[in-house]
Length: 337
Image 1: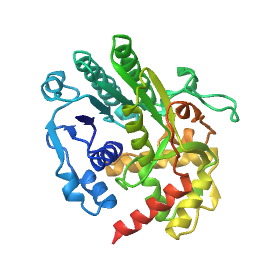
Image 2: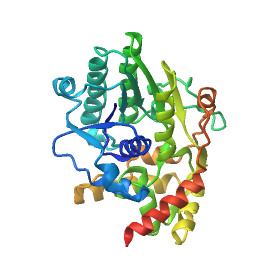
Image 3: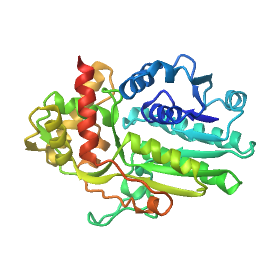
């Protein structure tokens, strides 16, 4: 039995789809009242018989912040995929991000330590890695996280969550950690990295000069499953297809969407204006800002990641970033109809 936390979210839903497509049993832990809208859409995008696959999911109401509900809901399993997390780069969400991500992971680890023959896949982030002052130097799993690089609250929460998993491993828990780069693919077009497609489609005028790692959501899901099925434990892995400039990424998106690519480079001053304007708009609309001070700063920096460690443990061919963009844009355009 496979258990997934955060199974109604972007990555968790993809993990569920790939497991069920392989004939695996899947139980999704969800908070009472959580919507299954996104996971239904994801199954529909990929399958000719989405309802048949969806009906195979076993559901359990549980809140990872409530250790007692976790204890009651986790049984008859040997594989746990922990994808649940609160994602935000808005400073007003600071306390919620730290509380939910750290305590949720701590509770899960503590419950699993009382179980036998169980293995945990913990989804972290490249944000929990250290940064290098040399733009040409690759960031690896050994690049130490430090507060001197002004990490986001989300990054801090993921780093501290990892520490809970490492503690569990020290106490005998079989586990491994994956650190995806920026995940691309079809999902909620109004949230996170998925929203980039919609932003370019609506007519993005400015591009940013930064470079970052990107990866297909299906690659992340498949790699998680492959590592789970292997004898790997006590390791962490960067999961990234390639390092791409935002300019190149936006150009690929515009081409796939048949719209004009962003023409003007957004320098430091324009980026400062952009996140402030986004913050004001967020306050007026009550919606989370599209651009925050942290995301604006990060997007103008050059971060390159070394994905080679993974290949020492499993064989895998990443989907090229351009191919991911093209396929995602196709799904987005079809979803408009």
